[in-house]
Length: 236
Image 1 (cartoon, rainbow, N blue to C red):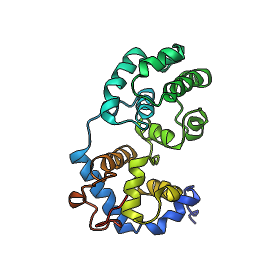
Image 2 (image 1 turned 120 degrees about the vertical axis):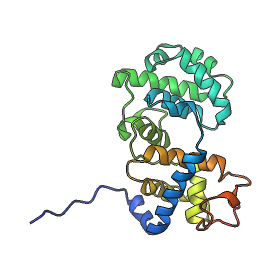
Image 3 (image 1 turned 30 degrees about the vertical axis):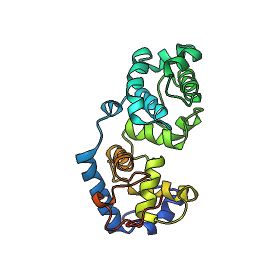
C-alpha cells in the first residue's frame, strides 16, 4: 500500500490566493507573460551574471531609482569594489562618494553593512537561505526573493512596485493594492511556473516597467487585456 504523499509546505496567504486564480486564467497569464518577455525583455547588465554579490548591488541600486541612471553607476561601483570582501574593507564614506549621484544615500551605508556582516558571519558568501538573507540588516522580503531567484535560480516570489501593479490590475482590479499586499505576495508565489522563477520574475518586472506602466499603460497592446480585471478602465 502506497503511503499518502505529504503536501508541500505553503503559507496561509499562498493557500488563500488559490481561489483567486482559476487554473485557465493562471495558465494563460504564465504563457503570455513569458512569450512577451521572450520578445520584449530588456537586456540589462545584471542579467548577464548569477553572482549573488552583483545581483545584490543591482537590487539595492534599483530601489527608487530608474534603470537608465543605475546602469553606468553599477559598472563603476563593481569596477571599484569587484567582490563583497573589497566592499567590506572600504571606508563607508568612500562607498557613499562612489554611490553619488544616485541619491537615497542610506543605501550605500546599508550595502556596506551587509558586506561587513556577510564577511563576518558567512565568510564573504551571500547565503541562499531566505531566513539567513533576511537576518542581514537591510535585506527585506523583496531583496531576499530577488537574490534567491536571480542568483540561485530558485522559484522565489518577488513583489516590487511594478509587480504589485501588474498583479493587482490583472487579477483584482479594485481596491488599494498596498492594503492587499499579502494577497499579492501569495499570488506572486503561486503564479511562478515550476523551475522558471528567474524568467518569470524578470518578465513581471519588465512588463510593469514597459507595458503595464503606472501612467498611460499600453492596454491596447497588452496580451492580458481579454481577462484583465482593470481593463478597459485603468485608474492606478
